[in-house]
Image (cartoon, rainbow, N blue to C red; front, top):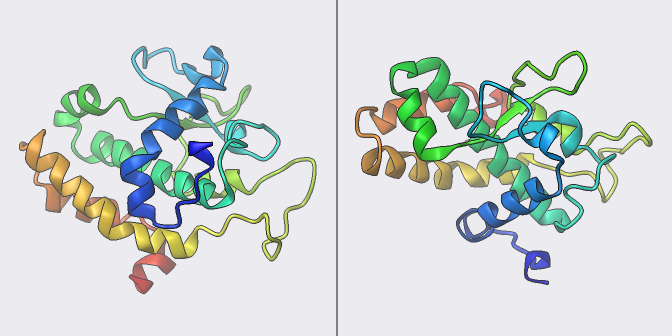
Length: 189
């Protein structure tokens, strides 16, 4: 029942439950999907369909924790992508320290393409079996919590580079991450 605990505060969720929930999520996914990219032997992959309402991989989470999980996963995938694309000379060291998952498309046609982390939010509100109305109680609203998460994730990012990867300036890295945020959210924060 501990994982059903309601955690409205993103920082509390991220620092106490996210890693456990991420492991639990991956434990429900078959190996061929969880380790889909052959060139990434040491890391997990998250395929779009595994986050949708059509699958039951996130059913162990409360509604609030689904929102927290989605936002934490967004930042995790974003951080990995920013390091790979903009700090490639340090990526192998970063990858060895984090083993962050890759967010990819579905088989057969897009499973070797990395998705923009923003697509995580779309995936978590998607169902091919029914239309989920944005005004319904089961719609996952990421907007407010996304803004709440910014200070926590900035602190985590700066702390990580200060402690483990001093070759990269944490403030510069965070600026590059911010450039990838949704425009609406940047204007509000």
